[in-house]
Image 1 (cartoon, helix red, strand yellow):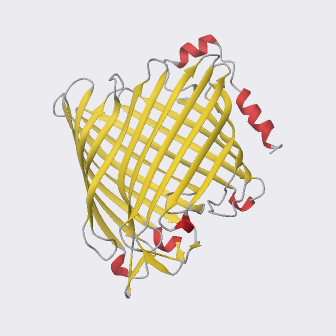
Image 2 (spheres, rainbow, N blue to C red; image 1 turned 30 degrees about the vertical axis):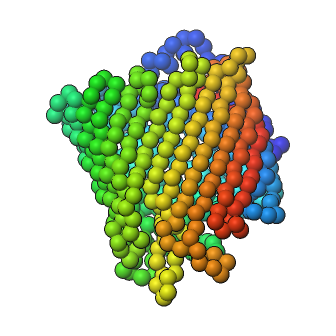
Image 3 (cartoon, rainbow, N blue to C red; image 1 turned 120 degrees about the horizontal axis):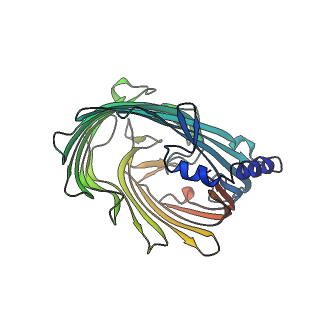
Amino acid sequence: MRSLWPLVAAALVAGAFPADGAEREKKKRPGRFRVGPLYLTPKLQLKNAGVDTNVFNQRTGEVPDTAVVLSPTVLGAWPVGRRLRLTGQGHVDLNYFRRQSQERSTDFGGEGRAEVDIGRITLFGAGGGGQSRQRFSIDLDQRVLRHERWGSAGLTASPTRRLSVTVFGSGYVYEYGSLLVRGANVKESLDRNELTGSAQARYALSRRTTLVGSADVIEDRFLRQPRAESRLSRSYRYMGGFEFSEKALLRGRLLAGVREFPASPSAPRYRGPALATALSVPLFHYGVGTVLAERDIYFALTPATLGRERLRNTYASTRLSGEATFNLPLALFGRGSFGFEEAKYLLPYAFAGRLAPRVDHLWTAGASLLRSFRAGIRIGGTVQWGRRVSSFPELSYEGLRYGVQAELVP
């Protein structure tokens, strides 16, 4: 901890005193600093430097430890004429635990995107990847190493000023480290290649509101399954709703629809609602409120055994969250958040020698109070609480993280 503080302090002070001329120029450019033809915007976050009261998410015998999460990020833009746009970003997350050294990790990733306008058609392509060692879902309590690679390409055609159509394809590859969790091999269960074909149509109802419809075909091919017939899963998603521009009172998207898994050897049959909503609204000129709502199907780590058959299990995830940020007197900045997630497994779950339905509920809440020091620097305190209640009581837990938080955006 002592060796980290000089690094944190130096990073927070660097770039804290930009000249007024540089600030005016910053507003005209796609990035804070110019390096040759590139424009770069660095950002540094000390997400938490304090105490984690339950490092391993245990119901009893909680293990506390000192934890630090430091995350530098850089955004890049390369303007090439008026028709071609190149953007990208990269990040590194440094996760430090004082005593539980096996939980330490250095996570990193990056992505890039290119767009070019040809008349009424815009061609685009993107790609990226990374490595991280984290908890990736409510289903997985252990911090597991995951490598991720992805790419996508497509086009948007605008036959009229109000109507646009987008078609694209994307591919993701997820590969996990080898780890046994309650008898299930993470690599065997979750390594997969996900291919998605998408079509979207947008019709501008006004300058601030757009009607949206989309259809996705998703194919998941599991890479380590012992049985060839259970490796492929195909599903569908149909959604419609509205998108609201940044100038609207209500900003973001409101999409709802249907998610469908046909019957197959690799996943149980499912047909139910889907939701993808992210909305924000100003809070009386003092701050911004944001609400997120999602519902989808995810693959579970632990398979279900029915009779002599060993089937892949899935769970329906419903997630709701909200955040409010406020500019307060005395150069203070406040942030409060809450979250709720329900994970309902479609097949009976086997645990501790018994087979029964499983439903998990996860509640989270957090608050931060920071003070601004010059442009782009905030330092203060943060607290985050989480509690999971499972139909298997042994899988329930509660934990608290609190400490120092800081942000620097030159």
